[in-house]
Length: 251
Length: 314
Image (tube, rainbow over all chains, first blue to last red; front, side, top):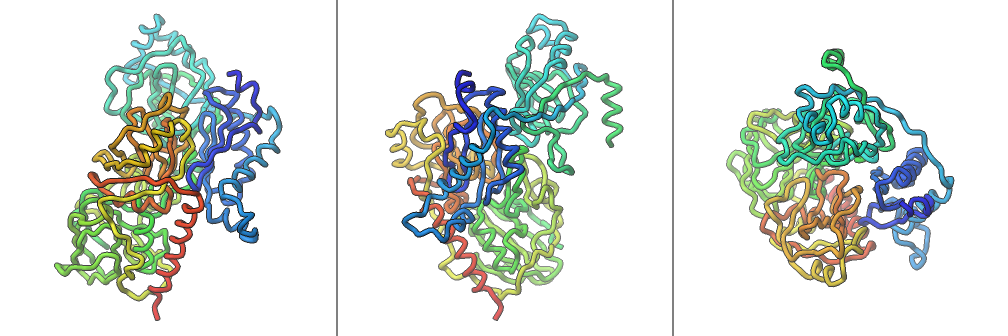
């Protein structure tokens, strides 16, 4: 935590990652402050991509840029050989220049995304367990879960899967002892201090408390996911009837 | 059209990958062996990115309704057209109603079948590649099954002279390969004695290897401290060292982010060598410079240019 207060965006650490990627570390830790620097940097990258950049991936506290090293080499074809730099050094210098231009303490405006959830019933077979585990009633668990604001730190693991921060400790619950073979798409669950939503059906050991009728992975859209790094999300409870209407209305 | 009579062990449609969506958690996919798949396309006059069939371990059998020009590159699956053997790394004509049959691989591991025009399936997020973990792309997002019908597209770029590739451009596949590695970004999480072990030992390819990655077995690579890092992006060729100390190299269908320390990356120029190894084969690593890695990419580009001019119709 202390590091996040001391450091500025321009203090980021730049490391080589193979011959065609570069890792930019804005700190070490899962911390909204560090992540806001990740987001400020990637918003700038969206507007002003680096030459030779293919794409980037942002994570909890870092950004990785993938580039075409052959294009970078061409950028210095007029430089005499003894003065030529490593491809990594050229890209690192461009990154450094970009970082220095960013305002100290700059921030970004997050998108707020509201996600309807039908809690309990067959959608949330573990809701009762989460309540018992935390000595709460089922309604209290729903109230706490749907009154938090969650930060999307990153998308990874599966297309559209958000790594969320910000869940209340009062509903934290350990993973299931035996994972389920398949968790349906849209499942909302809790694992330890984390909460999350599954965009596609996958095996998993999360405690399931509900399901959202909203699609998180959308092949027909660009971008193909509902959520992006840096979004702030809120869950709100809907009834079984509203859930069915939502599903029916879409098809 | 081309009908799948026998699908083979693991046959998928692949092009050169689905780029631009890693930030949304979408794997890149695409042909595991970039070189063999692109050469197959060049031999039939396709653009480099045309969709091909990738067959792993053991190939399938296909019936052609019409006469087609095809090429076969990569692992040797001893193909036959109507019982007549064909040579690997060459282009040839399959006659109308001809049957093209492949067997178990004898050298290498992955074989590519290109058809002039490319395989025509819907483009999903900019690519025809099959991503089986996400069940999208290619033919219904899955491996081919008996009875699947494939169509030929229009990804033709030039007229060609059918023939066999000069042996200069044909890689030799052995049971032991050496892969060049660039250190980083977490090599500092390992002591120098451990790095000496990593570069001084031989690792076996395990059966747990697939299109998402190659899991190896050999002398343990011990971390100085904790094995885990805060999840960050991974990338083709990245060598992760999980807590068990066994190297795990990321390939085409890898997840976009992972939380294990990465000792280094196999250079892109050597990835085709990696993906032609099969379970039981041995791998050694050699530390190299960025210059060497980029020269390997440059050499590959030069080879494509020479192959293009060699296949040009007089």
